[in-house]
Image 1 (tube, rainbow, N blue to C red):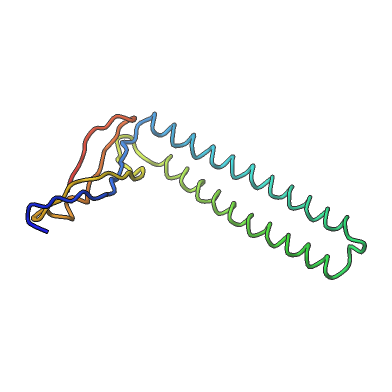
Image 2 (image 1 turned 180 degrees about the horizontal axis):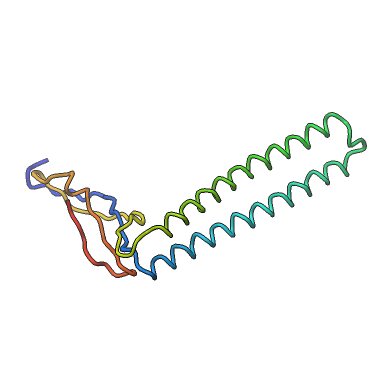
Length: 147
C-alpha cells in the first residue's frame, strides 16, 4: 500500500443522552414494560410447566414409575432454570429503574451504540478516529464529539 491509500473502516459511536423529563418518562416506560413482560413470561412459564407435568402424569399408566418421576423432575428443572433467568432479568430491570429515578436533569448518560464508517489514511490517529460520541437531547443531536 502506498501513503495515499485510504481505507474505509467501521467504528462504534457512543450515543449519550441528556436527561430531561421526556427522556426520563420514556426510559421508565420502557423499563416498566420490560418488567411487565418478565412477569407475564414468568406466569406463562409456570402455567406451561405445570401443564406439561400434568400431561406426562396423565399419559403414564403408573405416575409413580421412576421413569415418569425422572421425566417430571427434568421438566421441573428446566422450568426452574428458565425461571431463574427471568427473575435475574427482572432484578436487572428493577435496578435500572431505580438508577433512572436517581438521575438528575441535564445529566449525560450513555444510552447505547451505533456503528458508522469512516475513512483512514497513513498518518491518522486511529484511537482518535475510533472515539466518537453523539450527544442527544430529546432525540435531537446536540453535538458530535471526536477525541
